[in-house]
Image (cartoon, rainbow, N blue to C red; front, side, top):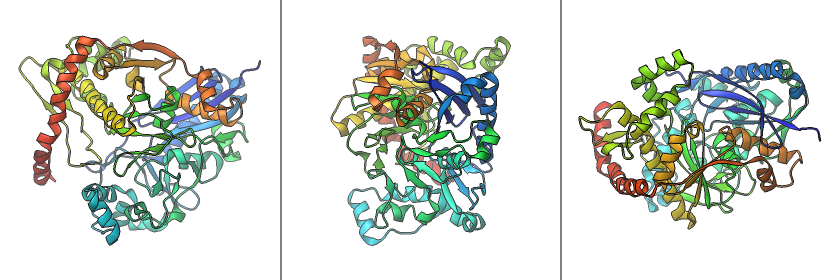
Length: 512
C-alpha cells in the first residue's frame, strides 16, 4: 500500500520545525530553523518580527523539497500548530502592523476601568477581584489602546499567531477553537467568542469584528493558495487542516486520552495537562482549554518560564559546557546532564521556586532559591532548577486531581526536556508515578498529524489514530527511597510562596 504523508508545521518560541509524518506515526523527513526567542525594547517586553515565522516556514518547506521532492509532492495535507498567547495585529490585507507580542511578555496596561456592578459583585463573591483585574491589565489590546493609538486605529484583525499563519497559507482569516488560548474574549466551554453579556467580554473589551473566524479542530481551514505555493514550494490546493495549540497537540501526541493519564510538557513553558469529557475550571476563571479532540477539554496548570530557565542557566552559568559543546560538536544539554548526576536527589537541601516569569494569580511573585550553604555548586543549582519545576508540576497535578476526583496514574513526558533520561528518572521519582516517553519527542507535531490524518478519513476516530500512530518507547519507574525524600522536601516547598508573598510585594513597591 502506498504511504500517505502529512506535513506538520510546528512554530515554537525558539524554533520552527517542518515535519513530515506517515500514518504509522513515523517521522519521514524533518527540518528545523532556530532563532532568538524574542527581542526586548523595555524591561519585561518580549516581541518578535512576525515575518520571521513565515520566512522560516518558507525556508523549511524548500529545504524539505531539496531532501525529498517526491515525498513533499505526495503530501495529502498540511497542519499548523504554534505556541500560544502570541498576538499579531494586522491590517485589512493581513499585513502585520507591529512585531508580535509573545506569551513571555510581561507588560501591563494601566487600565483602571471597572466592571459593571453585578460583575464586580460576582467576582468579589469568589474573592478573585485582584486576579480578574490583573487579567485586564495583561490584555494586549488594552495596552495597545493606551500606548499605540495609531496602531489601534489601523488594526483590522487581532490574531493569535496560528490564525496569522493560517491566513498566510490559505488567504483566510480562520483558526481552530483549540488554538484560542490567551487573554481573549473566548468562551472556552462553548468554543466560540464570548457573548456580549459574558464577563470575559468586559474584561477583554474588543470589537468582535476584529477577531478571526473559528472552526473546530479536525476540519478543513482551506487550501494552500497560489501565493503561498509560490513562496513555500508546496503544491497549490493542498488541504490545510485545523489542529490546536502546541500543548494541546502534545497531549494528543503522547496518547493522553482521559483523566487518568497526564502529559508533562517540558518546553519553554512547562505544563501539566490531562483530558476530560466535561468542562471544569481548576481555579475560578482558569479554564480548561478545548482539546484537539472536539467535545473534550484539557485542564492545565502552567509554569510560565519552565525550561526557559535551562536556557537562562546556560547563558549565566554554563560557559564551560557551551564551549565544550562547540569543540566536541554535541548538544550542550548532554553535558549539562552530567551535572545532574553529580548531585543527589534533593540537591543537598537547595530548593527553588520557579516563578521567574510571575504567576497569573499573582503577577508580583518572583523566583526564589533557599537553603544555600558553602557546599553548594552550580551543579546543585542546575538540579534544583529541574526539581523546582517538577515540584510546581506536582502541585499542578494535585490541583487537577482534586478537581476531577481521579488520580493521574501514568504520566507522559514530552518537549525538549524529555530527551534526557536523567530528567525522566528524576520526574518519576518526584511524582511517585510511572513516566513514559513515546517514539518521538516531536509530540506536538505528532498530535497535529493525528488530527490531519483523522480529518482526511485515514482513521475513523482519534482513538483509532492514536493506536496506530503513538507508541510508548521507554518507561521510568519511581525509586521508592527517592520518592519518600522528595515527598518530605515537597512539604517544605509548599511553604515557600506563602511565606515570601508579602516580601515579593515589598520588593515590587521599591523597584517598580
